Image 1 (cartoon, rainbow, N blue to C red):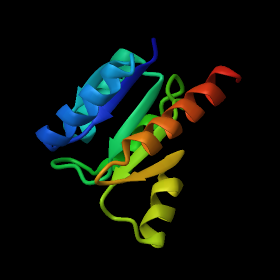
Image 2 (cartoon, helix red, strand yellow; image 1 turned 90 degrees about the horizontal axis):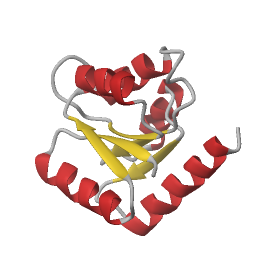
Image 3 (cartoon, one colour; image 1 turned 120 degrees about the horizontal axis):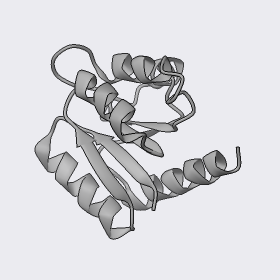
Image 4 (spheres, rainbow, N blue to C red; image 1 turned 180 degrees about the vertical axis):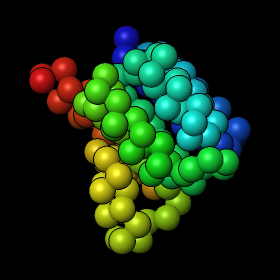
Length: 126
């Protein structure tokens, strides 16, 4: 069973995403801000991360993504950016920070699940 770290500061979005993932057989861990995302990623060693780009407190999702990418043990973990901001320049910034894909809010769960499966399959073939 793949483990997914969901980083989301909105409790409702976190609950909905977590339920969706658990119903599809994933093990889910969560974090509510950038520093706890990095700590959880280091502690839990997830197979994939769903990263909200607008997080409170010390740093946003892009900063957390960069911090995770800087960790040798986490550098290859796929990260999907979750965002309500879908302007091309913002999406470019997410990829530049180290995200592998982007999913806009509100979630299209079938599309999100397809992205998760694709990235997990690619990671398992490395």
